[in-house]
Image (tube, rainbow, N blue to C red):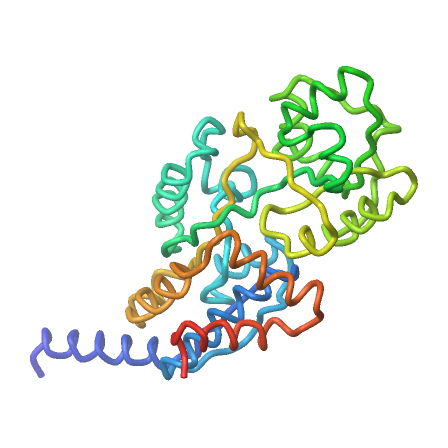
Length: 302
């Protein structure tokens, strides 16, 4: 038998085998991550692909290890995480606030790891400081620069957050460095394992004198609890745009996935994610139900 024909046949069999494998979708545990995972799962199933749901796999580190090991094929990641969390993506902090630059660098560097970043949503799920609307209005606090002036003037302030929020260099320490303030121990309520909804509830209720909370920019609980996120005019935080990432091998075997997921994520923006996240975190609806209703409303699935 002709050797070239044999090699071609082997390649076709390999490609057919790869495309026949189920697409394993991972995911993180917070409401938005669950929503994004279900958007991916439902969209791929609608396209007739065989999908395995591992949407509740774990935190960022767990999903990262799983995709590098080939245990999952795709999940939703955030561009900003490439700055600090991934050893394969050493992105200069000066580029972190530029959405185009950070995405391009994350895509370029991860391509060497066999991972392709698809197009991100037009949203920024960055860390923010949230205040009760009444408190912010009374003290004319709209930005972190305003907060710095307020603190230097001796204003009363106590913020609830997780140990990660207070200790990671890209979170509160980045705000303090950029805006020239330093919180004292009694101005922090450190809650081990706290989620943003928990810290925001503490701020809204004034628990233990708390009048501020860690939050994410697309949290659905902000509006529900009448909280406002302070702006970051100096760009101390990196941009955290959600994007599907996928093993390049899987994408080559199923090239239609790129168009499917790019189309879905192109419909997402800040306000849309806040609304959808609120339906999960505040109204108690399942991520799968919220995702399905949204995709149908956009005529993205049947």
